[in-house]
Amino acid sequence: MRPAPQFIVQLNGEALDEEVGENLRANGVDVAFLYDASGGQGIIPDRWPAPKGDYRGYAGDLSPSNIETQIPRIREAAGSARISLDLEEAGPATRKTVSIRPPSDFF
Image (cartoon, rainbow, N blue to C red; front, side, top):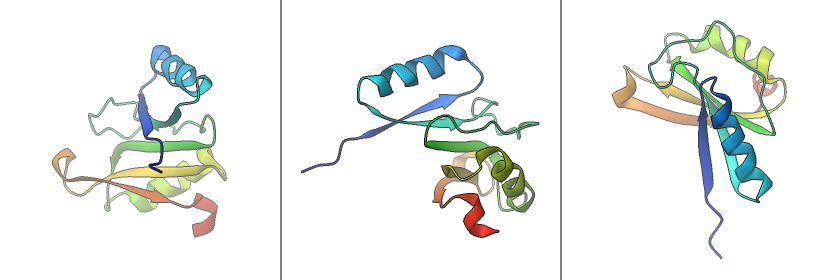
């Protein structure tokens, strides 16, 4: 049997995006939220939000050059929630998404 697809809803501060995602979840759809306040522009937020639900992705100019400084900030926001990080090597054209265990597993 083929697994059900997961839909990713990008959150950038618009209440409508979160409402759509929550409505899909309420109707049995597997939804993961990707927090990117810059809307894909590659800007690190001043503050990372806490996850809503049991899974959240984080994006916004995360790269090898800044991941060490951002992981503690994301960990503070995410707590023990399951998360993924959307990392860029040298800009949006080389983007890679990496799923990781709860940040507490690394510290």
